Length: 217
Image (cartoon, rainbow, N blue to C red; front, side, top):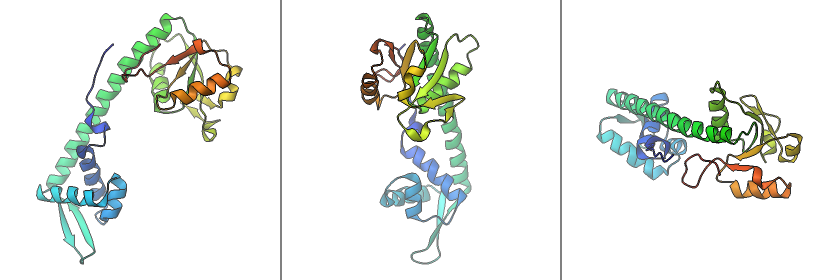
C-alpha cells in the first residue's frame, strides 16, 4: 500500500501557531509576549511578528495600559478565524485517523495471514496506543496483544487501554508468536536491548517502514 496524506496542522506550521495564539488570547487577554512565546514554543521576536500580522488583519487589537503593559483582545473576525482554523484542524485529525486506521488494518491482515495469535509490543507510546485502539474496534480479530514492553521504569505497572506496560526483563514471562517494535526513533536501541536478552530476531516485526507507511517485514 502506498498512501500519502498532507497534514499541515500536525506540523508546527504558521497556521497551527496562529490557531494557538488566537485560542490563548481568547482564554487570557493579559498574557505577555513572553508567556505567549512559551505557550506556542517560538521566540518572543517571532511572537511579535505573528501579533503584528494578526493585528493588521483585524484579528486582534492591542491596548496599552502602560509602555510595558499591553493586553491583547481578540476581535469578532479573530473569533471567526479561530473557529474556522479549529474546524479545519479537527477535520485534518479525522483524515489522519482514517489514514492511520486504513494502514493499520492492512498491517493487521498481514499478521493474521502469518497466523500469529499472540503479540508483544515494544514501546509504550502513541503508536502502541493507536494499534490497541484500532484492534479493539475489530470484531473479527483473532490475535491478542499480551503486554507492552518499555524501557521507562516510570511506566511499568501502568497500562494502555487495559494492556499492561512491563519491563523488557519480563519478556520471557509471555509466550508470544511475535514482537512488534512500535518506535522508529528508538528502533536500534530496542533491537540492541532484545539482542542482550537473547530474544529471537526472527520474531521481530517493524510496524513503521522507512517511508512512514505501516508495514511488516
